[in-house]
Image (tube, rainbow, N blue to C red; front, side, top):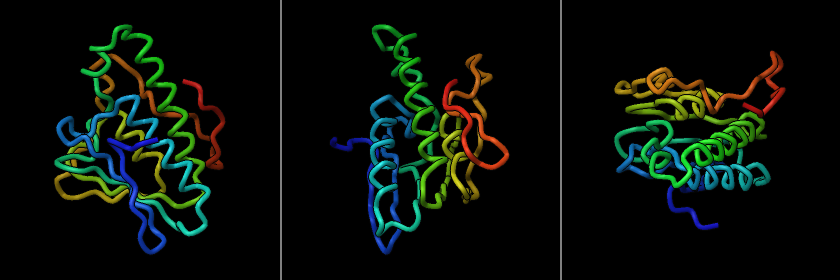
Length: 159
C-alpha cells in the first residue's frame, strides 16, 4: 500500500507516524485511516521499534474527521459508516499496540483526532494546542472510542 497521507520514519528505535494532509488540517478520510492502520500493523511486529510517536504536519495535529469528504460521497451514510468502522478498528489496534505510544500535539486536536490522542499512552501538548470535543457541534457521539475495561484491555470495538 502506498502512503499518501500518513508517513512513517524510523530512527533509533522510534517510529514516527505523521499525518500529512496539511491543507485540511490533517482531517481524516477513510484512506488516511487505512494507511494509519497499515503502519500500526507494521510497527507492532517490528522488533527494532521500541516506541511510537504520532504527530501532525502543518498547523494542527488533526481537525477530526473530514466532513467535506463525507458530504461529497455518493452515499454519505454508507461512507460515514465505513469510516467509523475503520476508525474504531484502528483505535483498537492503537490501544493494543505492543509499543508505548506518544502523541505530540499542536494546534487543533478535534473530534477523531482527540480519540486518537486519548488512545495513546502519553500526550505532550504544545502551548498553542486546543482540544476541541467537536462531536456535539454535529450532533454526533465519539466515533473513535472503544469501550475499555479498567485493566486497559478493550472489551469491544463495536460502536
